[in-house]
Amino acid sequence: MAADAPAADPTGILPVGSHRSPKKFRHWRRTRPFWGALVMIIGGVEILLTVWAPLPVVLHVGLQGAVGYLVPIIVVACGFLLIFTPSQRVFLSVVAAILGLASWLTSNLGGFFLGMLLTLIGAVVAFAWRPRPVSPPA
Image 1 (cartoon, one colour):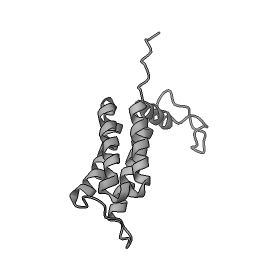
Image 2 (cartoon, rainbow, N blue to C red; image 1 turned 180 degrees about the horizontal axis):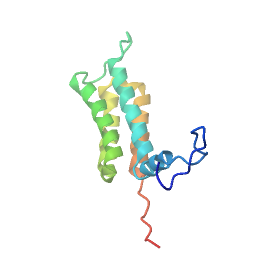
Image 3 (cartoon, rainbow, N blue to C red; image 1 turned 90 degrees about the horizontal axis):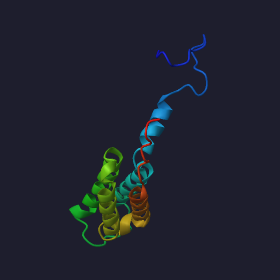
Image 4 (cartoon, helix red, strand yellow; image 1 turned 180 degrees about the vertical axis):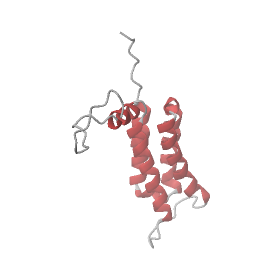
């Protein structure tokens, strides 16, 4: 156990508020456009699932070949790249927004509107995210 961590009682249960991992995750999450990327990933997965959907009424609009699978895969990849390389947020969010609009033609009307809207909302949130300014040491 670390020297600065509170001691556990005899039952082995730590006091409330003594866990450091949620604070570390919160700090990590705030240093990147996490929520925009997560919504973008969900939108890309939804578009990909509608391309794979075995529905008898699936609309086949536009190029239904490899582009129908490629667009949502790149959107999901942009979402993961936003999480792990937040310095590239402007480029990745613009690419995801363009591909989200392109999914209207390539992937069953953008995953029946829902996937396209989630991708666009995630791209806008990621584009608008700004890192917190570094405060000078006291």
